[in-house]
Image 1 (cartoon, rainbow, N blue to C red):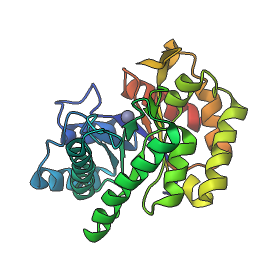
Image 2: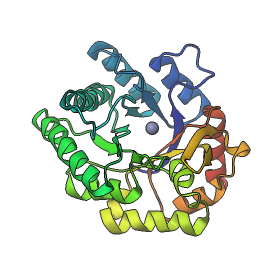
Image 3: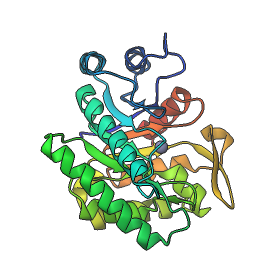
Length: 275
Ligand SMILES: [Zn+2]
């Protein structure tokens, strides 16, 4: 990526309709640079539709990513649930790739009371099978487990970075709001830069050239994330975060998941360009 692009998680509220195509057109009208297609309730787009999405994104100059279904748990107890989870990631990657998405993101797993180390091994094994299948299909989309906001959810920064170093084609979806909610910290310039430093140390400079970031305001408590908030109604130090991203010359997509979507995406973009 040449620079940092800003956009929304899902179709902007001000789009003419809720369709992905109208969403992409609206992103371009607003002067934003990217959009994440939300397959969170299931991948309900066919190949023909995906090709139209790709054409629209290409002509409008909008970069895309895709968010996989919520019903994924690579640490499920039942083998059939593991297979269904793997299938949902594969479907997201297949349709996402036809859409021209460079990355897909998903929520990898729950610990379900297992020790984190054991969960990690299970997630790694099950995700490795997905990656092998994608390789056989010659699908080169970046597969990015998300850094998660609750201590019950698999997905610390360390866990995701470990997957990245062990599995080819796996990247990090760095959700700064989730990490802040999970830790109750990680909300200052020095903490943001130390995260970027950690990513650089583990994955190299090229990871900072190809970032996938989620940002929103967030409400949180002892059990981590409670709900997403608009930036100005939250305590998230987004100006400091943007400063850190600028100083580390991070490039890639910044997806805004605030309830007000494009409003905060534009706020992030304007703030970043006025730093
Ligand atoms: Zn997510």
